[in-house]
Image (cartoon, rainbow, N blue to C red):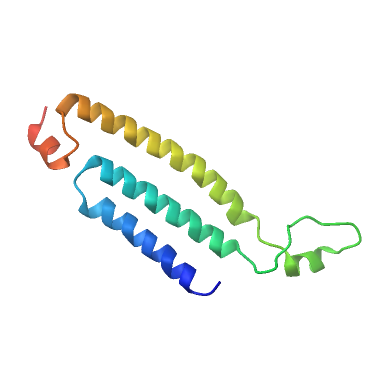
Length: 118
């Protein structure tokens, strides 16, 4: 698997941070948040990956020490599942707020929204 997948994940993380910091359009900011969340989830999955790993289920006749030497860590997978649910909720809330701001101000541009004040 190598370091290339980690570099691509880091690039995806940088794209998300760039969209979050540099863009003024609310839709692009929300997309940047989503890309950033996906990059963090991918990084967590990559940290828990083990080549030729087995599921962390103890079969009969095998000791816990033998299993621990080959088993994949289930904690990052559980964290990613939780993160996906939370990320979906945050994205839905951000989209709902963006729609309400568009209804009130008629634009997604943050500079215009800041200048209107009311």
